[in-house]
Image (cartoon, rainbow, N blue to C red):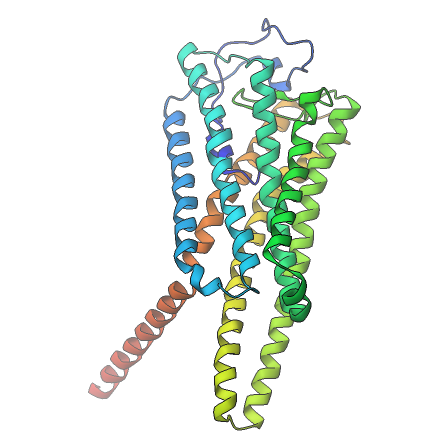
Length: 372
């Protein structure tokens, strides 16, 4: 899922055949159960998984701390909704690291202790799968809400100032979270199922093999919601970027034609600060959207394609879904670093350092040329 918790899903595989493993009648066996030979476990994978989950959680906590310190810059009513959505996104990423990650570590530790793949109970797999779907969809939907909010604020500033309030944003967050929650808990009410996925350390909706109509519809809903959120986020960011570029060109033309007055300077300073903050938020949002598309698209597209494709080899299916899972797991690790690194203060320091280095390099070459 957009969840970094998936970084904890071990890609190591058990070493004992599971042909005699008793399957719960309400669950469908995964294709990995028919494997004839499974490579031995790697004891180092548990440590790597723990490190990755810890690193992701610390990254999100650090980003939340930075946002808390910079909340003064977002005190304006027009900027507060974006800050609220950003905090909601980082909290979803943080919970997505800790909660499903703890489930995955439990399964992995159980396999390490027993030296074989042990199929989790139905209740455990249902809760694990529900958390995977919920924390996978929430960040994607919240990222879409952030893109729409910025698009409205930049293209229709007066409408945004009059209509978009913190109360409305709270309702949007609650609505999107409820949508993801309803889709996640449907299998708990016998509408679809969650099954253990290869290599036995995570549970999710059935992707391969024979599926019921409810399973297919749930998988289609998950993938289509995720892809729709990514697509509209891209479109909104493109529209916002073009609007900012057009406004900058107009401002540049006006400044070159007319001399600045004292009264205009005060308003110009305020508008310049607001514009720079808009650019900073847009850069952060654009990078988040690109990262989400790169990380999530393979996993979501593979799930979508597999609902219409009946025959593929087991090794190919498992290998590709694990690759998509690893890529999606990086999404919630990279999200907080966007806010940590792409802040105005950091960008100014980088630019100043680059300019200073270029000047010193040019001066040294000039002196060397004069000595010659």
